[in-house]
Amino acid sequence: MDLTHNAFGTWSGGRFMHFGESLTEERFISLIRLAYDSGIRTFVTSDVYGVGRADQILGQALNDFDRESYCLVGMLGHDIYEGKREGSKGYPRFSDPSLRSASEYSSYLKMAAEKSLENCSASKFDLVMLHNPDEKGYNDPAVWDAMSELKVAGFTDRLGIAPGPANGFTLDLIYSFEQFGELMDWAMIILNPLEPWPGRLCLEAAENAGIDILTRVVDYGGIFHGTMKPDHKFRDGDHRTYRPSGWVEEGLSRVDKMRSIIDKYDLSELHFSCLWNLSHAPVRSVVPT
Image 1 (cartoon, rainbow, N blue to C red):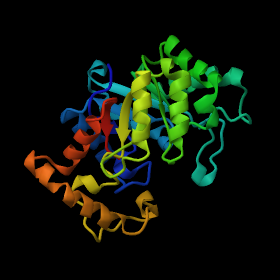
Image 2: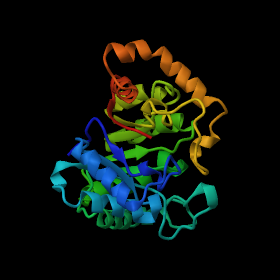
Image 3: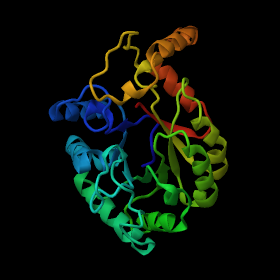
Image 4: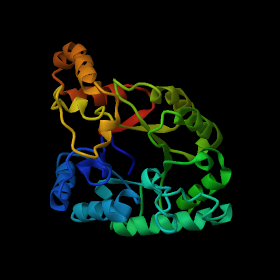
C-alpha cells in the first residue's frame, strides 16, 4: 500500500521528540487508534525513537487492524545497536567508519529492518526511508546499494530518504536525487506556508526524478493547530523553546493575514496548511509535526 494523503508520526504525543505534552503510554495508544478510526491510513515510525519503544507502541496500537488496511513507513539510519549515544547529537549513523565497513552496510540494514518490523508486529514495510543521513547517506553508492537490497530481500516495497531538520540539507538532497533517484520512491522534507524555505527548493528536482514528497511540520510547530496564543508556555525541554524569540506572535500574525482564504473555504488552519502543501506537484502526503 502506498502512502495516503495524510499520515501519523510516532514522534507525536510528546514521548520521543520533546514536542508538546508527554502522553502516558495508554493515552498514546488511544491517540494512534483514534487516528486510524478517523481515517488516517499511513503511520510513520523510526527505530531510534525511544530505542525501539515507539515501534512497539505502534505495533500494539494497530494490532487489531488488518495489516493490509494501512501503510507502514519505517525509518532506519541511526545505529542504536552498536553505536553509543552522544548527547544531543544522538546515535551515530550506521555508516560511521568506526562502526563498520561499507561491505557490512547491507547486513546491518537487514538486521535493523527485521528488529523494527518485529517491534511493529509486522512482516513488511511499505516504505523504508534512510533517516537523518550523514554525508555518506547522501553521496555514497554503497549506502544506496545496501538500501536497495532491503527491497530485493522483501523487507519493503519502496525506498526513500528523510533528512534531518538542518537547513543545509537542500543541496545534499538534490544531489542524492540526481545520483540515486532511480532507487528512491519518496523523500521527506519540512514544508508549510510559513516555512516554504528551504524545502520548496527541492521540489523541482524531486519531480524531475519521479520522487514523491512526504512533508512534515505541516503545523509550523503547532501554530496551524489553531490553539496557540501569544503567551503560550512550553513545557521544559520542548524543542520549540529554541526557536527565535517572538516566533509564536509573528506566526499567529501571519496566519491572521491568511484568514480570509481559510474562512472563505470553511477550513481549519491545519486543513489549510495541508492543502497548501499538497498543492505542490510532487507532494503526495502530509504529516503534522
